[in-house]
Image 1 (tube, rainbow, N blue to C red):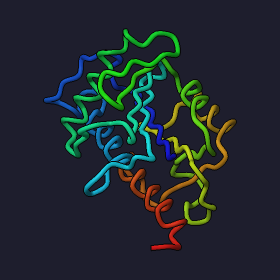
Image 2: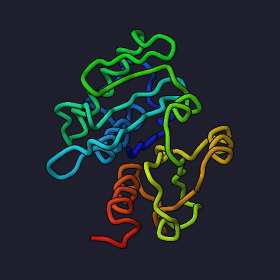
Image 3: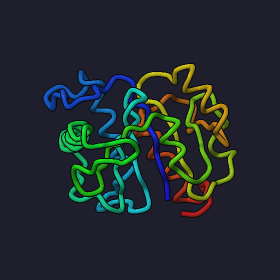
Length: 195
């Protein structure tokens, strides 16, 4: 399983999401591309991957590639899925998630609780990390990255304590969806050795 966790610092916690202004709604455009980048291939879905959006360190929206149905590559329809998950937040009680549509879940998990639920080595994706090409390829990793904002001090401290590695995907800062694509390629090619 490949898990991708993105910290959504500005996304509203409720369903007050405008599908007509995705960039102005907590950078929902970027977050939607992150979800599709984590899960979609050219003509299919990565069934062995999941995308997790940790929203303001209070809620986590999880999209499971093995269970999601009719996920499309356009930002607007993915944003609608995220909006619907946020709308279902009241149905998430304690550590029990709500599932507003197949494979789309919302739970009351902050970053620490989200990471507690995931297995495999934890890899922080950060521009100041060790180059990806210098790292060994982990089995079933969990990648953590931030949206368009830097990690907060609390997030950075938590990841410094828990991460098995801190890696950079290249010399340029990339959007979250681009970073996920590079990470997938690294895993797909066994560290750029097998094509």
